[in-house]
Image (cartoon, rainbow, N blue to C red):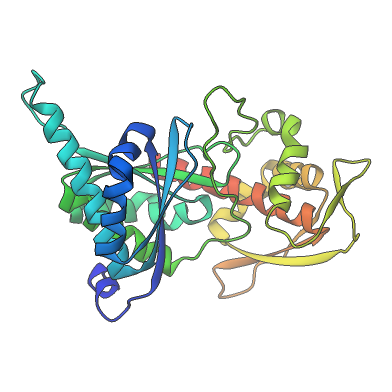
Length: 310
């Protein structure tokens, strides 16, 4: 499946989240909102901009792929214009590339990087854009930033290819979206750490975050947070055989750590002949299942990043 299909017969509905500095967002909004209004009208995409008074803001583009990429092209053109106009009073001789950050669920980053970094290398080579996937998750979220730099055309082509990968590999588990905080507010949990010492003090907050996406109410209990309806359910995940080791850890240390931190029961099925995957069953309250999933996905993400770096 190539990016041509996105614009042709496969005109699906997409959402792209861009992470931008306040100054860039101001330029895209324009005087009295004229610039963003024009983008909405000409592209037909829904363009939402997160609340102000933050150093960073999220611009969400949603709609059919044709509308999305029209809006995306207009945003890139605006950033390119800003760079050109800043060059007129500058002593710099070479024009810096347009740089953009998109935000994606961490659970999709493994597919984007590919085994040994092969997929991301292919995207870099075919589009000519520089692409960097952040190693850590954005604060208070299960999302990671992807930085793309290059000419407007190479960035547009690169994002199209990233969207193809994301359509083919939907996110797994609960995604906690990144919400920029006003400057000066404390960051409670910057994800991506795999050591329990780094995560443990934040467990209560993490339970709350994991539960934001759950239909069940939560009430304070003796051990962190307990589901008020005390419903126990099961959830199954499929994990590739070659990654199961990073979940289990040496002598089961990692899986035991995840069990203790989440409060969920986690069973890993024996390998099945001819299958490249292993079934993992998580049992517990909705909060503990969400947290266990979150921690497993964090381990998989850090492993995928490690592979790509080698």
